[in-house]
Image 1 (cartoon, rainbow, N blue to C red):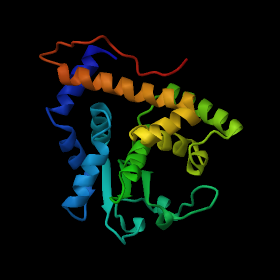
Image 2: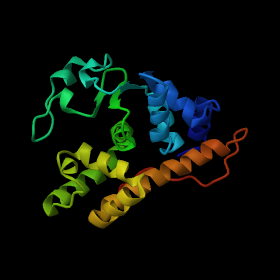
Image 3: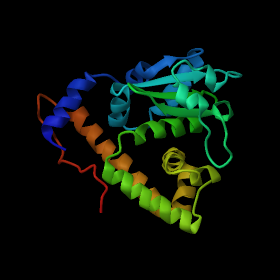
Length: 223
């Protein structure tokens, strides 16, 4: 990743904090408590990923208790008709969902748990994976299916759920240990993805008049 690209990211960041990026993605919140829950949930992600999501852009619609996902105005007609997983659940059977629309990524989620919020944002993050990273995760998923090494049934439903479950688990110490025990290869991949994103985040933060303090990391996980 070139110094010029890091400089461009720093200019795009414009000294905004993680909180400002997260609040800038929220297109609807039922109240301040829900907003604070979203900030607490998403601020564990590296600054780089929050910046990429914000600028894509990503629109976050936070549901209040009793509200159905289908009430979110940011969802596309396609996803409203969609059925997911082996159980063929519909949009209103979901606690949260992510929809890639023509000009933005829509994330609709209840504010009641940090895990669900982090899980849905992991779906957003996968939007920015390189083809090489996607291929690596796909190989791990095929291997996990062959050996039934899933942290939970949802992780086995699709490639997207496989990585989203893993990434959200990573931010909770007990679930992180479970991920490492069940699927160490996936754990290492997530650790590398987030670690590399954190390195780039540090470079963005350390940038001063075009001077970069750390060596260039690689964000390509291909082997």
